[in-house]
Length: 96
Image 1 (cartoon, rainbow, N blue to C red):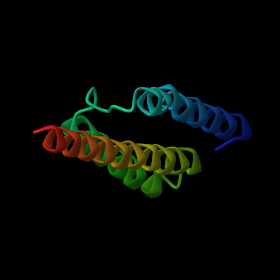
Image 2: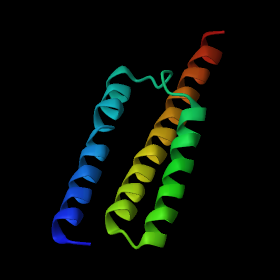
Image 3: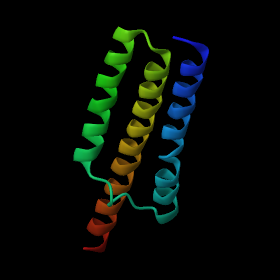
Image 4: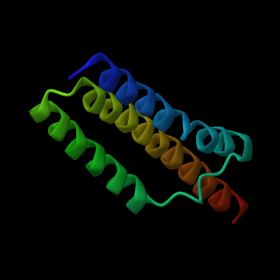
C-alpha cells in the first residue's frame, strides 16, 4: 500500500466518524434518542465487526482504524439511547 492510499483511507475514516457527531449532539440537546432504532444500532455494530475482520485479513490499517472508531461511536449511541429510553420510561411511571 502506498502512502497516498493510506492517507486517503485515514482521511475517509475521519470524515466518516465526524458524520456521526451531529447526531450525538442532537441527542444531547433534545435529551431524546427516540429517532434511533435498536435494530439500526445492532446492524451498525455487526457491520463494523465484519469490516474489522475484513481489514484485519487484508492487514489494512485504514479499514481497521475506521471500523474500531465507528464501532465505538455506535456503542456510544447505544448507551445514550438506553439511558434516555430508561429515563423516559421512569418519567412516564412517575407521572402515573
